Image 1: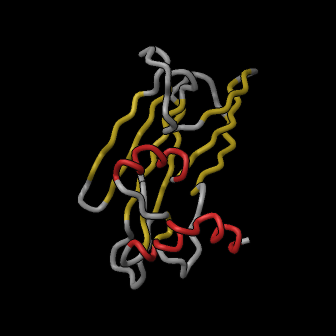
Image 2: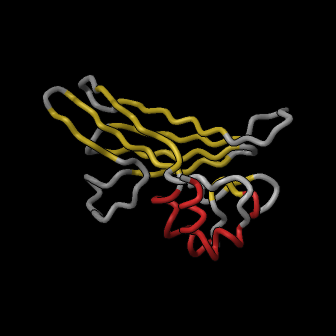
Length: 148
């Protein structure tokens, strides 16, 4: 859901600015990602909520919804296979002297059995401070090398 963000302009990106057509393709892979490793009874499973799904079977395809408020965006995925509902809420904290974006992820067990979750969540990639959009566009791999 979150394709790009930063401070002031596209030259101050935390997540690199993308045109709309490119953002549709790369956001699930370069944006925020959630990875679950879970156990329900004797069954262990792994899942990545909000990743593109190829299967069109309504019994196994996750249901996805988006909710938009004045100062917030929330996406929700309810997965009938894992029986886990994942919500990701994005908002900017009010009345702060600094720019910020908050991402709050919650999980709901929709199954009848207990579930134990191990979760990894965050950005797949951060852009280095002080690198302009032009530098990232023309010398992106070199800039990545300089980050290490």
